[in-house]
Structures are given as C-alpha cells and as structure tokens.
Length: 227
Image (tube, rainbow, N blue to C red):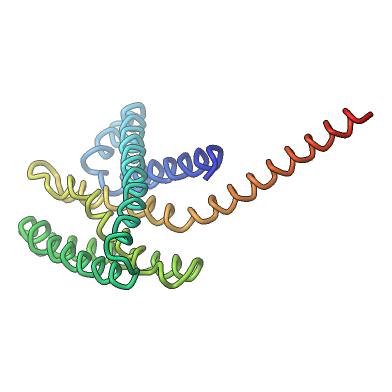
C-alpha cells in the first residue's frame, strides 16, 4: 500500500471509530454523561461530553488498527508454522471456540448478576458473533472463500482481545462501557477487513501510473537530447 492510500485508510478508520462511539454514546451513556447538562441547558458541558466520547472512539480506532496489522503478521507466522491453510484454519477455529467459551464463563457469567444483565451480555455476544459471520461472508464473497475462517477469527478473537480491558473493569458502570466499546471495535475491524483490498488495488494502479509518467518523462528527455 502506498503512503497516500495508507493515510486515507487510516483517517477513514479513525473517523469511523470516533463517529460510532460519539453517536452511540449519546444513548448508552445518556444517564451518566448527558442527561444532567441537557436538562440544565448546559450545552457547553453537553458538547464536552460528546467530544470526550469521540476522543475515546478515536483511541479505540488506533488500537484496532494496530491490532489489525499485528494480526496480518500473526496470520503469516501461523501459515509458516502449520504449512497449510487447511491446518491453520482448524487451529483458528479451535481458538475461536476457546475465546467464546472464555467470554461466557469468565467474563460474562461473573458480571451477570441480574436478568437484565444476562440478556445484555447474551445480546452483545450475539452481536459479536453475528457481525463476525456477516463480515467474514462478505470478505469471502468479495475476495475468495478461503478467507472466511481467517476473517471470522479476526472479528471474534482479535475484537475480544481489544475489548478485554472493558470486560475486566470491576468498578463503576461497567455494563455501559462494555456495551459502548464493543461497537467501535466491530465497526473499525469490519471496515479494515472489507476495504483493505480496495486500497491495495488502488496502490497498484497508482504505482503503475507513476511508472508510466516516469517512462514518459524519460522518453521526452531522450528525445530532447537527440535534438
């Protein structure tokens, strides 16, 4: 990927994380952050709360992008270790099962003290898995079917790793943070998986055009020297 396309890729993913967190935060964190300044007409404080959530979303986006490029390295290492994509896919499926089991038994279960919390964590798990399956489906459809398992692994395992700090908080209104922080990770991770080939292809086109311009300038220089 060229520097120009990487900057576009980075900035769009960054803005996506900030926008998702800011907008969703208006609903998820309304009682904690926005209701009091809204009712009191303190619009400066209201805006400050929104900007604070957007900044959190920008930070989550950066974490997501770092994890994405780290996963690309891990994926290549896995391919080299297990030699075949088939065996590496089975290993990834096993890790997916382990991660989901860990989420249910050691992250969700200890915090689900009420019926509402049981429903909340069940819905969040369904959203995580559902988004992963849909993203992996389109990734396989738009590239090739062999990418399905790897995309599923990234969307479930890597998203969970990114989400883990929120799941480990033991004080405060953890349910709202657990809910809020899942969505920027899902949005940015899905965006990265689905649009990366577009930017790679555009980079190839840009490099080809650059080579053509260089060849044209070289030809013009040679023509001018002959005259």
